[in-house]
View (cartoon, rainbow, N blue to C red):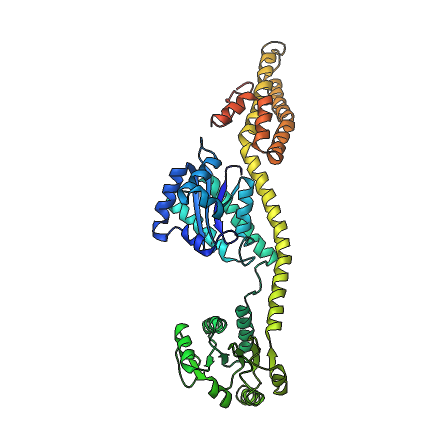
Length: 452
């Protein structure tokens, strides 16, 4: 856990242009990460790129430090002056926690987004393919992916829409499912373009309406639609706003977003639209008015018997989703802390596993050697059965006596970290500390148990 660092330019601290500047091109990514890994003295390096971040996740090789690796990485990327403003870094447990938050979508511009988990998994696979990932980073990222999956499964933190156009598209989709028929999108704007793409992808027939029909036809072409006069299920019909008002089509719903200075349909047009809907589809259309000022006057919609949802209601739905997400984010944060505690304990136990085995072996060796002397002198008259019973008793006592220091060492590793473990070993078993610092496994010397 101590040997992990994340250096990243993210949406929180950098502009899209700045993030793009430090994004490695796909065709050079493998070669660049291999070069960076070697140049900065990293034992492992994973590169994560999304539309909102460019992140380098690394561990330091023996003889190097995270500080020296980070400093060299920043120098190679941008020069330290610029890098200090654009990049942020996290080390040790803070780096692991940051990766957990990233994998859960809690560090994203849209809280709870799910795509980031797949992007992190892809980054791990790319690092594996290019040979830049080590076992330590793999464990960290795998645990972050599991934590992110648990957060989404148990909290639903990414559920619901906050984009106004997505909310509108979902409402229109539901309406078309409840009462099948074409949906009219009135006005050519970013809002209607997004809705056109989403509704087309869901197989919903559309009628694109604009004051200038040619702009509606351009929108149809940009979004992969075709134009047809009959409005067939697989086509996008286009018409001018004047024709829409004088000869309204039978639609199950209509979205208005024109940017006009006032209503673009009057009461009579709405009455005709409602009548056409009832005749052709069995119900008056459902209207979403996302224009400010309004494209459809609320009083006219009520008089025509047309259900209207305005921007106030759309904003309420968006705010409710954000409130729900904030509540779920708090729940997600609790789960992240639980996952971090579990990972911290697992890694601490792993870090002292060799020392724990060696401590147990030292007790076995010490008691076994004393028993050997006793069996050769004071207890030399014992039968073989009695000798074997003593050997078994010695093995049990060695385990019991070593239990207390082993439990204590594991707790020190979890609560204090490697510095505490080193202090423990320096006082209790200096030779084990020297073995660990020399990079040798802290395993017993294989002194045989008594009688072997």
